[in-house]
Image (tube, rainbow, N blue to C red; front, side, top):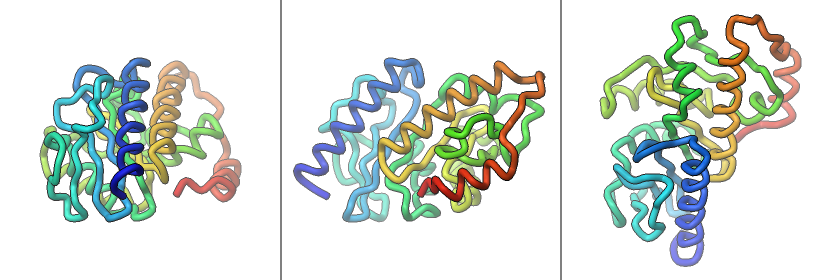
Length: 215
């Protein structure tokens, strides 16, 4: 996907990155976004870039083998994206943030590591589903990519312990919306934590997943 289509995707990454930044879902130079291209390559936000001030022309381009082709150097967490894409061939975009409430949940000692947030709302189930916890790794540790790869085939989103969420979607917009839904549900979970909230039943969850597949 070159020319007009790639230009449009670069502009959409910058627009949505600024929206996430302006609403406090990412801060400083944290967070990164990627989109799969039709030729098998990727666009990825650059390393140490603020999502609120992205220059579309400087967003990194990688080939199908993950080799840097142009733009600024890609995010140093590119291996997280590559691990998710490797296991999710139908996913077209990935968003990784250090969003406050999601990170807060990842620090709690009593969450279920197989499903960090209960199914509190229908839209959380529809856009995120089950959210496993990836054990803590040092930032940049290649083993983190292996840990993500082990879960990505069965889950469209994972939560990195003491770090933040990595969310895949069938489009850039779908990945962003799912990330936003995750952050809002994390906020709800923290508000209700310790109060034994009423979650959706397994039957209700199964019905939603059957009617609204994510990708």
